[in-house]
Image (tube, rainbow, N blue to C red; front, top):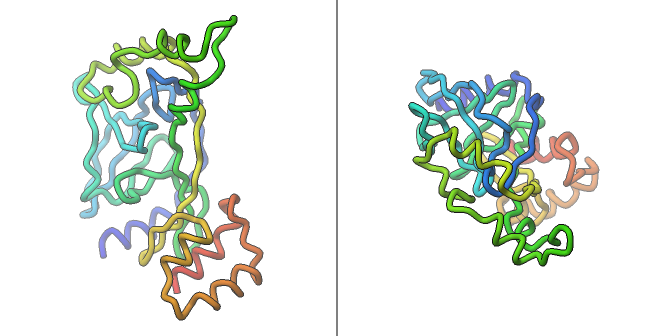
Length: 221
């Protein structure tokens, strides 16, 4: 219940991003630096941290005495990083990008590591050899328990990392990927026909956060 109450309060906060994004395969983070923020727990307590979102699986990382750590989300209600608000969804944190009184739309951003490695090489270098030169011992998931400044200094040694975006709908009752197929599977069979009519009536836009808000209302019923 406390998580739901705090979730409702978080809907009034801004979800506008204000920080640069230029991740690489050796620095696979959403923000260019670890940013001061707050972890809000289910019991209402708050912990100040320097945080960032790792782009392999959307995990929350923070700095502890200069060392990068991964946060456990079990008792976390929400996370504020700078001006951005994130909610725990399954094992990841996802940014709130649209909201109303019934819930919100959150955005998952994951790095396209495979695309970065298989891309064309520069100056005639083959993609595979170029990738090999750019792969180091600190790539992708090995940032945990590493010195933050060492990881930051390795940033330019990696390849540019494109982001793959997906949206999810979060209400007190549901956490579901914002696709017609996933929502059809999430609702009872006897609501399937109602869902189809509702989507058509409200002209749901599946790739637009604001255009997904009608589905927030539908799933909150």
